[in-house]
Length: 371
Image (cartoon, rainbow, N blue to C red; front, side, top):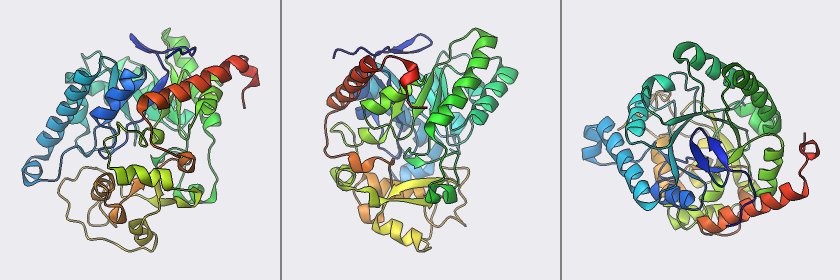
C-alpha cells in the first residue's frame, strides 16, 4: 500500500500506518485480528480481559487461567505476524498486576492501559523494554499520570492515547447523565489539552511523547482532521469488528452492519462507568431496571460488587461475542450506523489511510483544521 502518512514512532517502534487497533473485550480483539492489523502495517492490540472459556478447570484457578490464555494469544499473534503487537489491560481488572507482568514477560511491543488511571504501571514492568501507553480522557488525567510516573519512577509514558466520548464501550470523562443529554467534552478539546500537558513534560525531559486520538474516528477524513490538530496517530476500535479476521461470531458482526442511530443507548455498567451499547432484548431489561442474579465465577473486576450489580458484564459480553444476542451487551462507538459491510482488515486500513493521505495532501496546513 502506498501510504503518504508519516509513521507513528513510539520509542524504537515504527508503525508504518499510524493506526492503533483498539483493544476490545471480551474476545473481540484476539490474536487473529491483532495479527491481521499488524500485517497491514498498523498496530494490532489484543484485549486481555475475558479470554478464558467459562469451564470448571478455569474457575478452579482464575489467575493461572487468565495468564495462560493471554500467553497463548500473544504467542499465536507472534507466529502470524512480525508486525507491531500489543495488549490492552484495564486498570479495573482484579488481576491487573499479574496480567501486566505476563504481558511484559511475553515481550509484547506495548501495553495500553485505561478504565482507570494506570498510576502504578511502570512498577509492574520494571526492567522491561515494553512501551507503556496510558489511555486517558482529559488533560487533567494526563497531568496526573505523567506527574506521578515522573515523581515515583523517573519515567514518562512512551505515548499517550486520549479518548473522547464518541468511543465504544466504557466511557471516561463524562457521566451517564451528561452522555444521555449530549453534554459531551469534544475529543478536539481534550486532544488540545493533552497536547499542552504533554509538551510541558517533553520540554522537561527532552523526550518525544506522541499523542494518539481515539473515540469515534470512522474514516480517513476523521483521521486527517486529528492528525492536523497535532495527533501523531489514531486509535480505531469498532470498525475492526466488521472485518473477516475478527474472531467474533457472524451474528455479532451482522448486528453492527444492521444497526442504525436509534440502536445506540447508554447504560451504567457494573464496572462503575457509563457505557455505550447497541440495543438488545437484554439491554431493554436493564433499562427497565430489571436484575439478573449473579453467580460470580471470576471476580474479574475490582470495581464490581456481585451483590449489588444488576447483571454480570462478563457473561453478557461473552454471550454477545458468541452470538447469543438476546442476552448480550454489545459495546459500540457513536458511528455504528455508518458501517455497511464486513470487509478484510487490509481493505479497511488501506481505505482509511488512503483517504487520510489524500485529505492531508489537500489540506496540508494545520491552521485549516477544525478547531
